[in-house]
Image 1 (tube, rainbow, N blue to C red):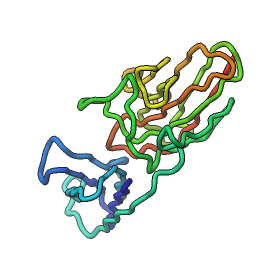
Image 2 (cartoon, rainbow, N blue to C red):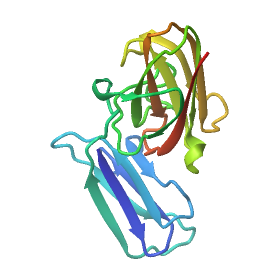
Image 3 (tube, rainbow, N blue to C red):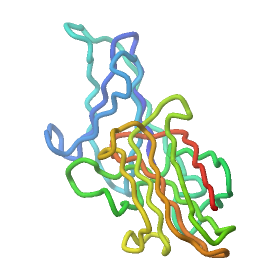
Image 4 (cartoon, rainbow, N blue to C red):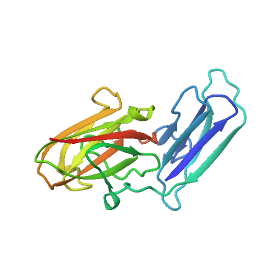
Length: 212
């Protein structure tokens, strides 16, 4: 995972990333705050991949100026894939999609038109009840808020085993996703928490788990 940060001397920053230089269709646009002098984002690259970065002034009538462009490599943390899924417990679990890879698509997202899957984090939860498992992903808890996708699988990494999927692109874009499903005590299920925009790093969120 590579983090790209553009820091200007005060004008509004936009960093556009192309796979093909000058392309209008293959790019990510890092501009999390239209009034910010910092533009940052992350993306997954393979060895030998070449990208092109356009540093831009987003200020109307602006003259631009000096800036710094920093590119940093980050090892994906625990929970990046099914092989190292984080353990979720009943109650509130704190997650963060920053610097995670875009490994999975939820059963209610994907493709080349919005919503396009972004960085995701995987959790494993073992049911403590026979009843209804309710899960909420709240991205506004960290004070930022981003479009989310929440998918619940019985087989990790397989959207075909989804027991419920919520994509807030379709449900109001409020940064909160909810799913619920029937479970039996001792059953392990997998929770995929996703940013549904490939140009967004995501960030901190609360994962609320309740089994009754």
